[in-house]
Length: 471
Image (cartoon, rainbow, N blue to C red; front, side, top):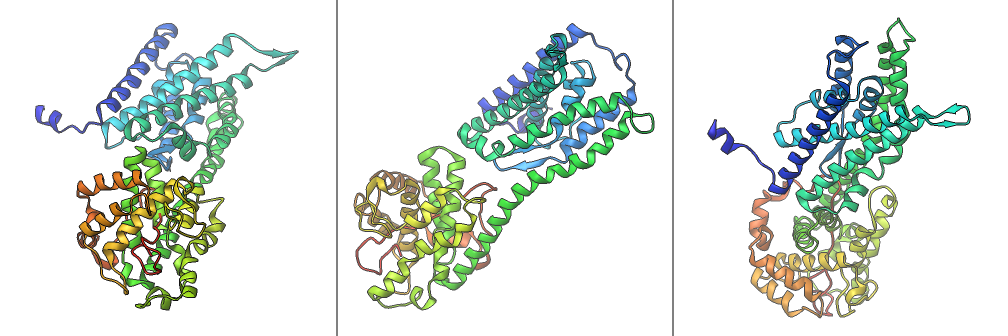
């Protein structure tokens, strides 16, 4: 037994403390409701069949959940939890939500998921009960149930998403605003439009319309409810489809320019490490990862003869190669409204700008250059220096670091050079290119895309000469 306890997987201390706090709060509030309303199973006027039927609905709703970008999920549990709040004593709905959910292999995740769902149900039950004891009228029109279920659903949503957002923030430092934007901002409207169905489910169960049992009507409602989940599911799948499509494009680019095998992937790993250290924000690091993966996407439109030319480019040829930054933005422009934010386009267009203003395509200088483009630009330069090209041999990792440092304040942001140097001395996998390629298992290696909802770029020449380390 002692050995099992020692092997027990534990989250970080502050996350564990938060989970136990949520669970304890649920126990206290549930105890209060039971003491105030009395405990009896089955409650008066109900049968064990009623209780098992609704337990099955709770289980089913969680079983068909939708995975969300930042380590979260969403389901139709809220509809059945609110219907339970309307139908049963206020202590029963939270208890059923806690007991009848599918199990999770990780005990503390299971405890948190059950506890936060239950706490949201308790809060909704208290709001609903308040309006049942304090009826609302507009003239002769009674609004008690409509206002009650509306505010109960808002309460459930706020508590539920608030607790999940907080635990994600405690786990990896992702800002609250970013968690809301990625996970819940696009869900809120459909959630509130669906919430009145909870009241319909409850009233339909109380007043049988088919076969003398209200459950038949509830089961019929499951058909549109189940298919409404596809709105959420398709949103997530769309992002995953874009990721897969772009992965194919990057493989096509690397096949076209074999000397840069795994170039964008290594640039992305370097850039995301810099971003993670700079922002202390996993979501931001993942977004920069995606952008870095795509920073050279415009080279698909550049002739291979120029990309692989072993001699110095003419001014006209160099201008064509430089156009890959704007070509990349044009190529991904159709995805602007559904897949990518401004950060990705900033990286693609500006990863060859220089701190001293001698880069391209806009000749931006210093802080005029978007910070994400400065990050990816530095990562791209280091990768290019250590990879070699047809027109010059590769530098050692030590030589590349020295050149990065020499160009601090000239080509690169001094703050980022200092941070990069610290990361380099920690000896990450990307520091040595051969070790990196070996770890990625050769030319057919799998991508290291982060989980959805994550995301690349390259730097400017270290010298005015058209053939330099950052091309």
